[in-house]
Length: 359
Image (cartoon, rainbow, N blue to C red; front, side, top):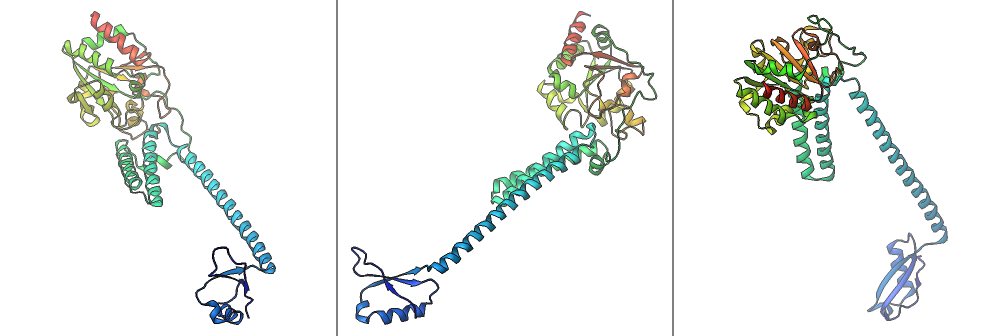
């Protein structure tokens, strides 16, 4: 029979009957105990509150079980934290191992791919948090980054697998002068270049990352205006991956209000180089390297380039002889028709403008 005890009467609650029973007592036993302890008339009009009484023996069991449960939960929390740390470290190692073997010329493709990954991560987070904004925005970023990666790979005549895994286990060596070069680099002066530009019939400007770094796009537009006043046909050759990403040079030249009809894509301008008097290369490196066309041993072999080496004269504006993203020498610099104008692109173009005006 259940042990039913009457608790002390609560003040202001005369009709409240508070009962204490042992923990684990079944309902029928409680009712039987109430019927045994109280006459039926004593229960009329009263509310019964049943409180479980924790016996010391059972309390000790619960206490020990609670400590065991707490210890188990603590161990699970520690294990979960270790798993998070381990996954983070593995992701860091994987990211470094994925990017390290990739050549500098392929880095814009990898950057675009990583942007796509961030979009996918945001979309996955949105699914976990049930956040529609994160899902939609992440999918847009992931899709656009993927499409951009595919387009850049096609522009470089490379597959994504070739970009990511071709360099594993290989060492990229620098490439010297191409077959057509004599190994000598010829420097020039702004005055000599100004004469070449002012008396040319057609000048093709080839912008690159160096133009973006020097922020010389407005000065290039001023130089083009000066040449056009002299009747020179000025055009701009845009390589698909010149700069950091596709469209980088288009944006810079549009900022300088360069007329859009003067911008020519690689497929349009390459047939025009043999008829070009001067190709003015400003900060472009790997996208003008003839080794991509002539040297099967070059890391960039097979990448479409601007055929500036086919112009009658080539003038390269460059700070130094340091290689570009690919980390290899540019065979164009040792070609017999190429001269180098060393210095900051903005300062060099400014000097060219002044020299052209003096003619």
